Structure formats: C-alpha cells, structure tokens
Amino acid sequence: MKKIKIPHTYVIIFYIILFCAALTWVIPGGKYVETIQGDGVKTLVYEPVERVPQSWQVFSAFYKGFVDRADIIVFILIIGGAFWIVNDSKAFDIGTAGFLKKARTFESNFLIRKMGVENFLLTSIMLLFSIFGAVFGMSEETIAFCLVLVPMAISMGYDSITGVCMVFVAAGLGFAGAILNPFTIGVAQGLAGLPLFSGIEYRIFCWVVINAAGFTWILRYAAKVKKNPQLSPVYEEDQYWRDLHTNQDAEIRYYTPKAAWYTFTGLTVVLLLFSFLYPQTTLTIGNSQMEGLPLIPLITVLFMITSFFTLRKTVHLYILNLLFFTIFFLIIGVMGYDWYIMEIATLFFALGMVAGLANDRTPDELVKLFMDGCKDILGAALVVGLAGGIIVILQDAHVIDTILFRLSKGMEGLGQVATVGMMYLIQNLINLVIPSGSAKAALTMPIMAPFSDLIGLSKQATVMAFQFGDGFTNMITPTSGVLIAVLGVSRIPYEIWLRWIWKFMVVLIILGFLLLIPTVLIPMNGF
Image (cartoon, rainbow, N blue to C red):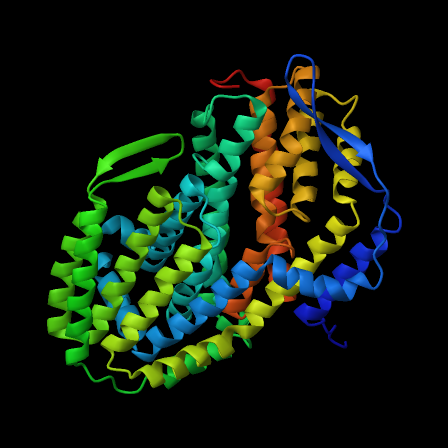
C-alpha cells in the first residue's frame, strides 16, 4: 500500500488561507458595534457591513501576516541566536548529564522508585510549567524553554514531542485550567461583571483533574517511545537533535577563562545598581498582590554567591547558573513588572552575549554564532508569519464577527446543559481563528454573559466555557503563533503534530464538557 504523502507545513497553511479566502465569498460581512443604553450599560450590537471578498489578497496576506506577527518572529530569531551561543559552550550537555546522574540518587526513595525516577522528573517539570500557565498565563515564554528541554528529552531517550509536552502542553493544560490567569479569567470575569477570580475553588479542582488526565496521557506516550524510539512519529525528524548531541559528545575541557570572571564582575555591578534602583518588588498573582518584596537584592546576593563557586569549578556551570537566574528574572519581570515579548527577548539576548563572552569568544565570533543560530531557526520564524496570514484574510473580509453572530444565534431555545455545551463548542471554534484569549474574551463575553442571564445560566459557567474553549485548542490551532513557533524551534512538522495530538484533543475537549456540567447542576461557591 502506497504511503500517503502529507504536504509540507507551508503548503498546509497556504491551503488554509485559500479555504478562508473562499469562505469570504460566501459569508456576509458584519461587525459588532458598542452601544450605550439609557442606563449607561455598554452592549455589543451586531450590524451587517459590506462584504470584502478576498482573492489576490491571499498573497498580500503573507506580508501582512509577517507584519502582524513581527514581535514573535523577531523573538524567535533572537532566542535562536542567543541559545546557539549558549550551546557553543557545551554547558547544556554537562548540565543534562549531571542532572540525570543526580536524578538517579532519588531511586533510594520508595515512592519515587515505585513511580519511576524519569516519570517523577517529567511530572515535576510539567507541574511547574502548568502552574506557570495557570497563574500568569505562560505562553510565548515556552518557545525559549523548548530549546532547552527538547534536547534534554532526546538525551533521556524520549523524543521531541515529549520535550514539547513537558513545556508547551503542560503550560497549555495549566492555561486551560486557569486558576489566576489575568489574561483569560481576569478579563472574562471583569467583562461578565463577576468578582475577579471568584469561583476559584472549583477551578482548582478542574485544574487538578485536567493535569491528572493530561500528565497520564503524556507519561504513557513517553514510556512507549522510551521502550521503542522508532515508534515515535518524529523519529526521523529527531535525527537533527541526535546528530547535534553526537557532535557535542567530544571530550569537554573544564576551565574558567579570565573573561568569565570579568563578566561576573560586570554583572555584579549591574545587579547591585538594579538592587539600589528597585529595592522592593510587588508581585501580582491573580487579583492579589505581594508588596514590598526585596526580590532583586535577594536574587543579586544569591547570584554572587552561586556564581563565585561555579566559576571556581568551570565556566560551563557558571553559564548554567546564568540560565537559572535568567529564568528567575523572567518570572519576576512577568509577575512584577508586566514584561512581555520585548523584555523577554532582551533578557535572553543578554544571556547569549554574556555566555559567549564568558566562554572567551571574540565579538566577531559572537556575531557569527548568533547569525548561525538565526539561520538555523529561520524556518520556524517564517512559518509564524505565514500562519498569521490566515487571520488577516478573515479580518480584512469583515467575516469574523459574522461567524460569531451566527454561532451565538444557534444557542437559542436550548436547555442549560446544552447551552453551556454550545457556548463551549463556539469558544473552541472561535479559538481556531482568534487564538488570543484576551481578544476573544473582549469579543464574546459581552454577548455570552447577557444571554446567560436571559436563560438563568450562571455567568461563572459562561466564563468557564470560555476558559476551557480558549485553552485546549491553543495546542492545535494553526493560527496560534506560539504553537507554530514552538513546533518550528522543536523541528516538528505541523502535520505530524496534528496527527499525534488530535486524539489527545478529543479527550481533553470531552473532559472539559464533563467539568462544565456541575457548574449548571450543582450549587457551588461563586456560581
């Protein structure tokens, strides 16, 4: 039997753009307009507008897609260049080998030995990223971490899909079961007129259930690949990572050049200055704030101590130490200073430069390494821009609001369970074309919340339908710049990812609907 050849990711995206362009000739144009009623309440009213069918625009959509996703594209290039410099130091190889060797010491613990050391490690890493997704909506940040954990997964005998699951999917599970995510729960509840982060007790329960189901699925898959690596659907694609690991297996010389001590001195001065300028930090976790925390001075002191001892051993451990503190500053920046892509890219760019200088590389060598990294990851950056063209076609045709209006009309006359299920389905479908949680909340909640009042449905249930509908399909929608970027840097073709994850998506979507039923039938706090 002849094997079916699946088109290249770029070809698939172009086909989707063509399909969306064809829809613009059929779907009427429309938009939601904000109106203010006599009592001062703002509502969204749907109004038909002239349809703008798309034809030759399928080609200009690429340009507009690149412009629209420029922040993520530049982010990917900077991250790729920075990590190429860090990889040049062989620090990751030493760190991974030492981490796995240290992990073997856990086998003395009965519970961990029963669970399996590697299962314990995978679960611990996934739990960490799920918490990040649930608390502050980690999304774009996962792109950088994939460049660390995908090679680590390969070295542990797994595959790149397992590495992506450890970071991106785990954060996605947390994002779907959001507890304090201000970008989804915060915006949606605010628009629905609910107390921010109310109903948290049931959402915590949902987060636990979603993680339990998701982690179990991932661990079972990882165990199968570990037992027989050729069963992995990306076995051939992962040859890149295996070759990279083999090329880095040459004997590593442990040393600490003077340049490393110079970077340590310079960073210490900079961090002491920042400690003086920002002696206290206010962390925002959901709707609560932790004020007056001396985080930057504390991190500075810890950096000075740990860097001194790692430099006395080898520059490789010092560079790993730089990575760890980069992560710490990333968390502080996101939760304390509203950092986004620009600040995160700047942070990792600085990591790459300092790591290269510590490894005694000249400025010319740093430029060459950075360019090599950008060249290596260019395909991932390009596909993000191409996928952005899908949204451009639908937006320019003025049909997105029409799609939402027609879907919402389909809920009329249904019972409460069926209605919340239909809301959930609509949110999943809309997420395929509008992957931004905040944007989708701003568009759908002013429509869904009043409708739920009319039929006596809890607004909290409506918010959870949005929450689940916004979360799960982020892991599969081709319009998500983050997903496409993650797959690109991990070298997983979208068509293979789709073939692997669709069953997992079906399980999660069904689970989401089952978790919505109690919000309608059982009285709960906040509902």
